[in-house]
Structures are given as structure tokens and as C-alpha cells.
Amino acid sequence: MSRTLFPVGHLTKAEVRERARRLGLRTADKPDSQDVCFISKTGGREVFLGKRIPFRRANVVDEGGNSVGAVDAVEMITIGQRRGLGLPGGSPKQFVLDVDVERAVVVVGDESRLATSTVHVDGVTWSHEPPPLGGDVLVQASAHGTAQPAIVESADRGEFVVRWLEPQRRVAPGQSVVLYDPTNRFVLGGGTAR
Image 1 (spheres, helix red, strand yellow):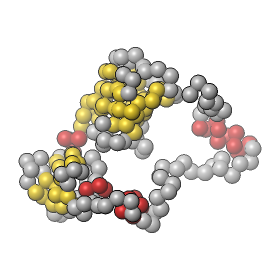
Image 2 (cartoon, rainbow, N blue to C red):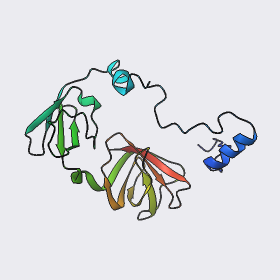
Image 3 (cartoon, helix red, strand yellow):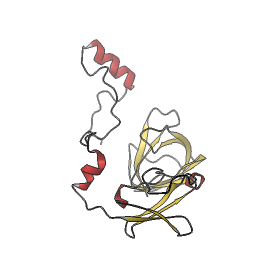
Image 4 (cartoon, helix red, strand yellow):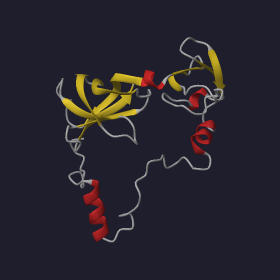
């Protein structure tokens, strides 16, 4: 990292786009990409993953362990998901609370059960050094979401724990979690939700 050069690292995205316009670059007004570029819209992630891993049918249960449905591919289910769970129509909305891929079980429940006050993150890379414990940060855990205020509860070499100032929707294991400084201008570091 000490030898890496970021020639536009000091500029905002808007400033980079303006410079590209002045240079006549065709990408100046290109829409931001929110998708994985190698997954086609026609087949989607199901086709992409289905060619690479075997899918397994899973039982969908409520929090009491009662069977309420089934899914064809436990590998395609994620925390917070509401659709495609094989649940009967007319019942109250149910959201995925837990996915046990090994046992092929998906637990569903009320959306309120997704709220959490902390997130544990592994595989951390810091852009400089960990923020001070108790320090204010902004944390983003969804590509389509916004960074939310939190404090750093612990920060070690390869992991950190942050406490949201307001409860947030639980972050699915494997999802990226990025910390920003309180002004939301600089990336402090990031890792993968545990």
C-alpha cells in the first residue's frame, strides 16, 4: 500500500466526471454500475452459480422449528430475503432470519427480528490504521444503502466490531462492511461480515 498511487484519490466522483467531460471522454456520463459485470441479466446469479456449485433443496421453518415451506436452492437464499421462499399466500410477511447451508434449513420470521445493534467483521484491511475505540464512524453494509453512524467497539488486526447508534437490519455473513470517517469522505477500512 505504501507504494500505491491513486492519481484521482483526492477528487470526488463528481470532480472526476467533470474532468472526463472536459477531456471529451465517453465515460463521463456513463451510469454507475451496481451489478456484478460478469453475471448476465438473462440468466442472473442463479444460472451463474448453478454452473459452478450444486444446489440443494432446503426446508423453510418458523422460529419454533415448524416447517412452513421449502426452497429449491439454499445457496440462493440470504438474510432479509422475503420473496421466493415457497411460503403460502395470504400469510403475514416473513423474512429470512437465518440460513444454515450445512443443514439445509432456512429460518423465517417477522421483519422486526432482523434489527441488530452490532456487526462483527473479519478479514479487515485498514487504509491506514484502525480508528480509535469508541470513535465515531459511518458504516455501510449495502451497495444500495447509505452509511450509518456507529462507534468502533473493538478493532484488532483482522477484525472489528461496530455498534450502530440506531439499530440496523442485520448484515448477511459474507457481505462487505466498509467504515468511513464521520464526514463520509474517506474510507478507513473494510472487511466481511461474520
